[in-house]
Length: 243
Image (tube, rainbow, N blue to C red; front, side, top):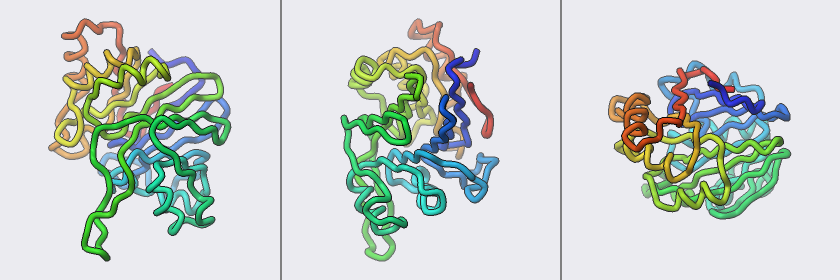
């Protein structure tokens, strides 16, 4: 069964997702098109109205700077990341909109709320010989023009306040990591589904490398064990879409 809300979600492997909105806008989230599963190259991306990066790890920041430099999308991000981007993107301080968890901005005709994520962030700064701090990890709830809402959790463990995300922002579909090791696995993701109260789930951040071993079938089994038999798991092949 599809979503039936004039919204198309395309998964390009790992956490890289493209969303086409009812109003025809293109959203890119964690655009690492260089991941081993992606059938699409970053230089073939021709549209991006809104860019979201959940945290500063290289497998999520990915091709974001190159795409933003070329296509100039709106880019709301955590404050410290915006300071770093101001020195790297055309337009300087106006290139990205700094915000923080609990905040909501309206850009490109869409409403974006930044939520908590339980993970680490940053990357390696070869010049300084120390880690590069790019702000804390986050998730995003994006409200479409027709009020349909998606939640991209980013990299995270399950945490009890996912219940608050469900209560406050009421996402219709959740994009949840299930690979394990660096994030929650299927068992924890099933609890996240229960806390969020969603009926549609798109698994992400699995299968990219052998260490990300969680599978959609394991998620389905874990949901069944919790009695959540009415939740639909949309396991997409890389490059495939849900609409």
